[in-house]
Image (tube, rainbow, N blue to C red; front, side, top):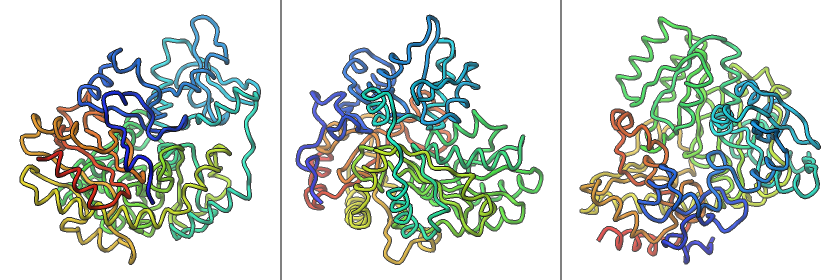
Length: 477
């Protein structure tokens, strides 16, 4: 399971803006110094001008920008391409524009002043055109058709891992697109009703609920007090849906899904769980929820060179009767080809990454330069162990806080000889000052929610365990 980035991680100053991995379709980018992270958030030309790529929902890929130029918006107008008519129409409505088909490609045209609204849909809803689709359209002015046999092969594989029937799994252009699809389903069932976010989540999930819905009640700590607050809320208000992560990002908390399920059933509230960090390999959340949203970009792929998501429907849940026509797949053909190949060794990779992460978490927890470590395998919660599969572990993601973090976190980050970029689930280790990247403009609010802005999030790969631990020891020395 060796990878070129094991021996030669992208973490040097000269790597600023380089794609991670070295692919034209990479989903991560190297930000080697703390000042580069801040410069990226502040849009400093020193950083932005060196960015050859970026996470595709946040950063318009160069191939996407070439498509936008080729779509030739009129003066004063702008344009974004989308994978299908529905996504283009949704963006056009939000940006007060119009959806148009050009040579088999759907696009939303809007006045340039409405680009922020269109860009918010692109980022949060995640229904983006992939870089491979852009590449093909630029070359041939057409898109490749999806291979139904390959799609069935891949869905059967996901079904084996998830325990759901293959026809209850739909494929999407990103993990956020899967979440957005579930959000649309639950809000259509109870229009005009608010949603609940239980536990501090990945940033865009909360953005979807707050920007595109009728309001959201946020329970950031997902503790006993929040459970009591949720119970009281459900007694007095009809809720469209309850969203959570298992485990959560970045503190790796595990909400009490059985308790949530018991409450939700009483009030007819569907639960949507994001299991991206937990993964199909480690945990079985499906019996306790109605939808499982998974970013296939992460551990299922393992390479970091393809964007995709899956939405799995509990065959015994509130939405089981709405399949399969209500959930068409919208993953681009060439992305599916790459994903199918990448995913073949997913169980083997996860087994190695689980073991590496557990040992690294134990090492960090005992290190005198570390104030705190967050990882499900350290004093595992009864709920996690209840939902853990017999062969499963505790995942490949951990967060830790160096002592005197405001002073030392940048130093530790810059000394760590692992690739420095934002993503997770890859077979090579990635480290990032996650809170700075995900919540730079709301750090005070994040701190109020119990998240330290200086924690470092580590997505542990499949490197040799001793070698990986030695790199952390050096950085912390």
